[in-house]
Image (cartoon, rainbow, N blue to C red; front, side, top):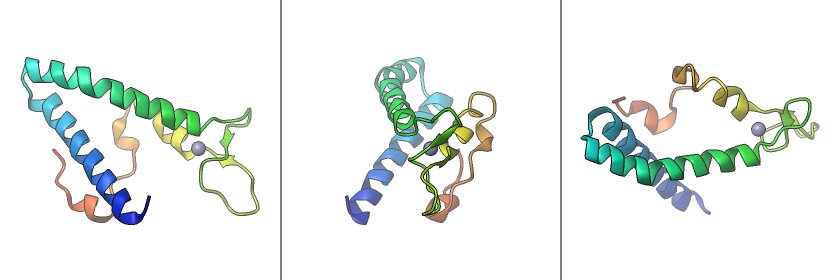
Length: 105
Ligand SMILES: [Zn+2]
């Protein structure tokens, strides 16, 4: 996937997530139900895929996260952030690049 297609994919996913957020905060019961039925399976599948890609060893390290060339594995950054989400979603790093300018809803 080249950078143009990757950006188009990111934009599509971001728009869908914005729609989910908006529906969760302002949607009717019917819209919430429809969004939940279509969106939750997509989100759980995405998280399952992410967790499968960042499978850790007995030391909490994975080989999917960025690492210096001399290291084979490194502590998993994804799991470090994800394990805090259920209690504090603000722990995720703020958006960078052009998404940093997008108003939060
Ligand atoms: Zn990882």
